[in-house]
Image (cartoon, rainbow, N blue to C red; front, top):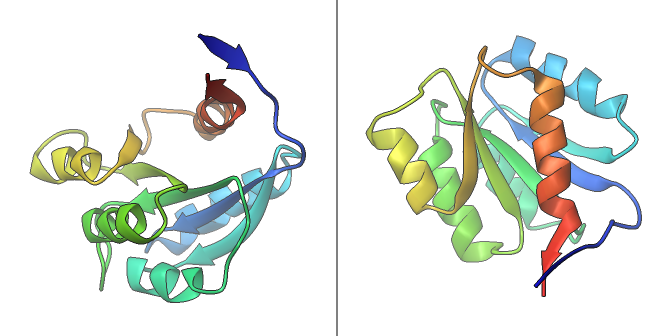
Length: 136
């Protein structure tokens, strides 16, 4: 049985993308949306994982680019799934299919959004809905 449970307070989000423009665009959008709290913006998966050791915000979401230096999105998703299984991860990429997208799903990513094919507000709506619904 599914029931809707709305969260008390904002959903924490971390952005991980090697594109400074995309990081800035997402940051501005998230900062204007009262449903979310921007917890960090990172250039690589390595930077995110290094920062995650000092966190206890729940609920929490990570938006992961697939193609990044140091730890790519696949490796980052794998490390999040192992070390932080309660964090929801989503992929953001110019890739729309292929091995790396499949590997993102295998490593616990809830959904991969292709950059340019979705409005960013739609992506935030999907994330909010995913975080708001609890399965009994």
